[in-house]
Amino acid sequence: MPELPEAETIARGLSNQLVGWEITGVKNLVPALRNPLNLRKLQKDLVGAKVTEVTRRGKGIIVKLENGKAVLMQLGMTGACRICPTGTKLLKHERLIFHLDNGLDWRYEDIRKFGNVQSFTFGDENDTPEFLRSLGVEPLGEDFSGKFLFERTRKRICAVKELLLNQKIVAGIGNIYVSELLYRAKVRPQREAGTVTRREADLIVDETKSVLLESIAAGGTTISDYKALDGTAGKFEQDLRVYGKAGLACAKCGKLIEKITIGGRSTFYCPRCQR
DNA sequence: AATCAGACCTGGACGC
DNA sequence: TGCGTCCAGGTCTGAT
Image 1 (cartoon, rainbow, N blue to C red):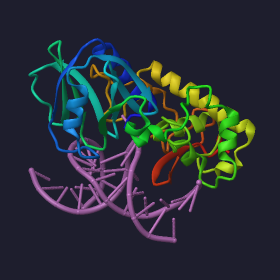
Image 2 (image 1 turned 90 degrees about the vertical axis):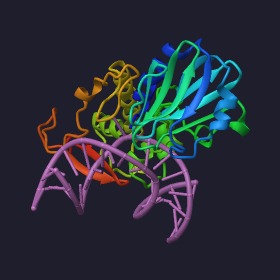
Image 3 (image 1 turned 135 degrees about the vertical axis):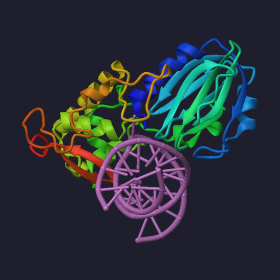
Image 4 (image 1 turned 90 degrees about the horizontal axis):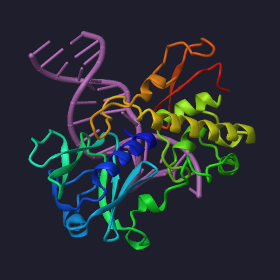
């Protein structure tokens, strides 16, 4: 579900709600999400510690504690968080509860249980989840440049869309925004990555940054399950130009938007504007 | 090292 | 109403 802008929106909401408060208890409502939940480790690492900071890496949310521990929260396709008073009636898909010393709960909800929540020692290579260790550059950082993308696409025969979805190369782009940014950059998603020119690499990088920043400013995109901490939907959905728009006219040229499958996933593009 | 199909799980939309 | 099929924002695994 959530890509970088949605994870960023949730991380900012959690930062407002959690920083300065102590975690007093952890409870699981299911034995496993994508992986078995290690409740003992979560309790040992978190209970009694104050939250100092909430950050994001790719699509992962990281909640840091004063004792040097941290929680990695990956939302999968349907993960969400909410803050509510302890004792509030459970929702059907709430999977984890973190009790706080201000009488509130931080709850993790996840319909499909594709998410991942685990604690680790921040800064300790041996105790850092493999997902974080192998993550590529931040798309909004200086490391993600036209030069970088051009070099990483050389001799790659996979579709440029698939390369941009590879979290080990660049971390945070997902299936909605990749269609959007390639439309803006006028590059067909099915193009062999190695055929992308240096000029196109510059454009792809620029459009990646602008689409992600615009979406963060709008609070993310809501297709079905996503919501921010306060339950509000993201407003970027109305700014999507190709995703989910198969059969509708391209706003720039009027040609009908096409839907194809790449890497087993829905992909949208304009056959005239994108080359 | 890279690529690809399949797996994980639940629910909504659709057709009959 | 009820069934069946297809689809969904993400990773991870195991086989080539």
